[in-house]
Length: 298
Image (cartoon, rainbow, N blue to C red; front, side, top):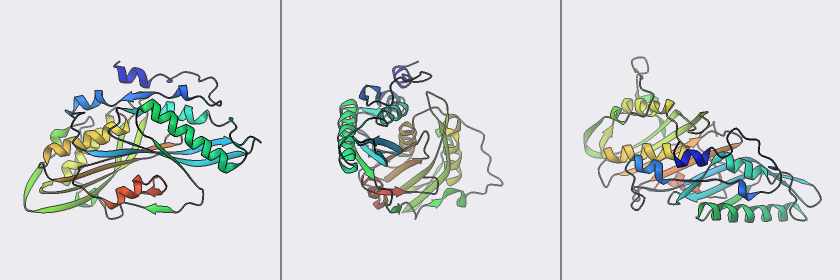
């Protein structure tokens, strides 16, 4: 077991005492570098920019009078951070607020919790972390509506998928005469937690602008090959980005975003893009104040 997996398994299979009393020591930071090395991603010259968005749907605390306060918590930090937060540790940490009392009223309670969460996570991950509580009456903002399901370009009756460990050799390209843009969505992304081995499901949104055309059939086969992979959500997003980045030309635009479904009341939404790529929807997702969703699964 490598260093990352040892850290990630800190809470695995263990009864966590006192998890309902505020306890920032429960947080576990995972270095991004180990997985990036495997895919020739240079930490000092990342081929992408982006962020990780987390939604915690079951955050709850209490006022000093014991009045329960429950909200959706949205978190954001940059992919340039040295660490990411391990998901079970984040869940246990947020649960530690459940029976803890903060502030004389609901607004004060939420303000104190927000400040503590930003401080604790920023210190643990050694980067700036933004937190925001979204009210129950918040408007749902639809994003990635102009992306087409990739299966629309594939004959599913003749398609044969038989590799279920990440297989970049499946990807095939052809050269176009002119630069073209592609907005694709794959709604059957599945990978597995590298610690618990539990399945993670999500929708993958892919945009690229290039003279090269990546065969949609080969993309379906490649993305399906993650079904038996064991990686964190953020790692899968970066792996897919890097494989496509290596196929395309240097100045081509590329964007990859994986909107995973919630597990344990928390979902993770990593997004990576080339520096020259502007996707308006991604700015809505990145807005810490907005409840932006990509499909019915979220």
